[in-house]
Length: 249
Image (cartoon, rainbow, N blue to C red; front, side, top):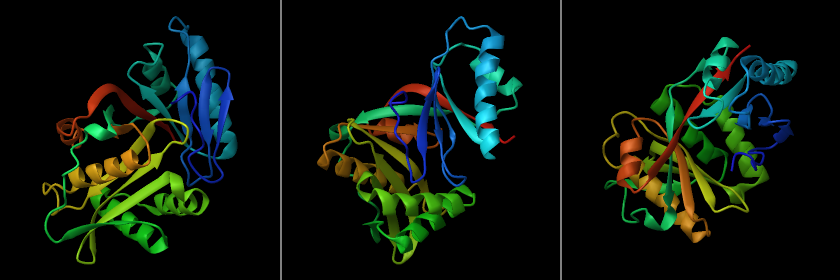
């Protein structure tokens, strides 16, 4: 999936240069290294040269970027070399996978809450309101990404929001990868005061049903320590870890 990655948004392109697969996107999109095939016995100088190539590429574009380092990536000291080059690691996440047909289908939202599909700018605004309240981060870039995706390839993006009356209290999205059996779960978040009521679980089950109906066999998610136990109870299996190493320049 990483070696064969496809662009994830309007204006994005995947570049395969030497031993690296990376995505270059507009400033509001995701920029970063998806996969690297470095030799396990590579000398530090060789690793540093590959890292420097990526820094030069994104710096020339005026973009910060992320190097997604997985627990099984080689050489073993790659994380150390990234830190030495000025990258800052964010908290590690766990990559989990489940078969869509194995996720319990009967996880419903609590009484008084309904799940609606997002298909326009008004719906995107609801998603970003939840994102900002749930994660405490600015969602301007996310809003532009979602609007671009809905305009360009809406069939490959599923976004949903849970409403208590007219108040958005939880949201999530799913990216369907054409030509593969995989659908990725992203951005699941619930506002404070509504956590612990089964909303995250309900939105996972909701998206699993959609993925299964569209012929996708597997779900994959990069999970925080908060969401990992919920996903494991739903039948997801951990495969490895992934750590975002961020370079701001």
